[in-house]
Length: 253
Image (cartoon, rainbow, N blue to C red; front, side):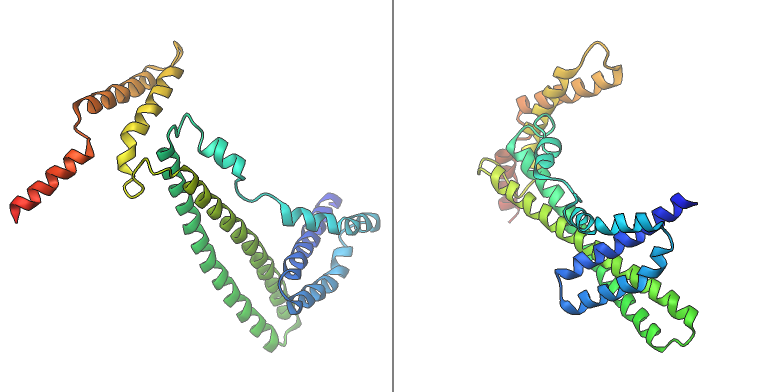
């Protein structure tokens, strides 16, 4: 029971520390609200831990605020380069560029959805604050206040996640510029794939061993031979296909 109480206290106290840290970077009005929240929560939090634990935890407040502020949320540039864009899977600059496009778009979509969630959360917070102002029942008022505190904490987390999503979006943008050396088409993803897939399949073929499964060998060698045949036949040479399409269009006119 004591361990459960300790965990609950730390969880609640840390949330308050985090909220204070977030609003310190926004405006003084919100900062005062967070200080009021801390003062209001203190009596109940003190009932959850032994006095010595309370003292030690409060002494760590600055450290915990710093930990929450600088914690890793999404990928670092090192992880993006070495794990996501690793050379065996994305062996050409074109392949890396187009993977950057995919990754950046995922983060854009998630950031937009997070923005909608944030707006919805802010409206719900306003509605709760309105209910709290008019509610007379003390128990209901207490429940409304808990919901308000939870919404504020949720908003703080959304702000932290949004900032880190934007950080990664900007990193993908920088990487796109780095890999775009003008040697490939940046409008049509399909045009680089035959060459990129050829490199990928050759890399996979080199990793096959006597222990590789028959379906794995069949899949890798099958794709590799198909790519080599297509490249040899010239059936996917785009300048020829584009010229043919242009000529057919001219004849129809």
